[in-house]
Image 1 (cartoon, rainbow, N blue to C red):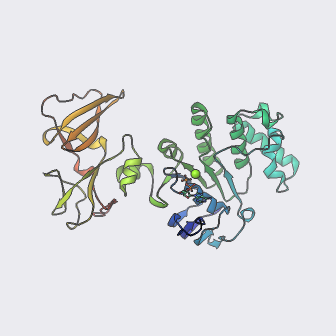
Image 2 (cartoon, helix red, strand yellow):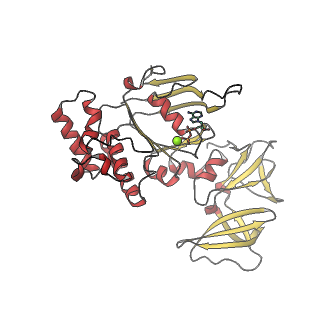
Length: 358
Ligand code: ADP
Ligand code: MG
């Protein structure tokens, strides 16, 4: 096991002839602590797979270095890195049995047959594959094949980290939930660093202790699910995490406090100075409420989600989402809304204004 460190890593794939390179990763310095459970969360195309491939050595970054426990492995081949990687789509040998598929990474590294059998039996049990060990992999469904791929990632004992690249994409929803809990359980048992890539916030938040949010080739925030919810550092994190995501609204500043559509608001995190550039406030739907005074709005839509109602309101051109309890009345005449100052954040060119000891 090791602590994995990225130092000023950037990566550009070779551009088509005559074109300038575009960086798929834009300078990432990041530590993956030994034994951590990380989720790498971000939309399609933001660089997640590129980053995993750089850890495992399938890809050498154009710039920067990768350290395992302080040792530079940037130019080392995959075999020397002891990383297990599970890909998005099943990688199995169709003509081999399930057993032989699972034993392959172990036999390949010279593990004695008795010990390999023990390991394979254990992992097969965990993945509910025990009754199919002697079938050929070719006969399995996509689910079954992906379970073999997961098993091949999990079966090795001496690895520095296990990387999962959206491994549950082809798995049906019910089994997805089961496998995700199993992975989490397994992490608690074996304590190997796991990096789990997904574009699904629920998956990320249930699996990980630390979520690394990526956007457009960079890491925008690393934090616990609670930190990402309470204080999104970048408007993208606010918007991507939460359901519905954070409201991001244009504002001006007056003595460091935000003014939204001529309404002077109060934020627990005022700006030090009246900045220029793109200025916005961010407030999650959970922290918008109806009141006797505040910002006048028009109600556009009420969606009943059982315990909550999602209410969409409009002030001038701006749409705002609110989460309201199931029993809470929705005012019918001249509704007004208020923002909770402690949860109102100011963003300057998409980055949160850092004041106070946040
Ligand atoms: P993600 O896994 O988050 O969807 P990727 O790491 O696959 O993102 O891709 C990041 C960016 O790099 C994308 O713009 C993608 O088109 C580009 N890219 C990925 N692989 C290659 C490649 N082999 N050659 C050229 N461009 C690539
Ligand atoms: Mg990918």
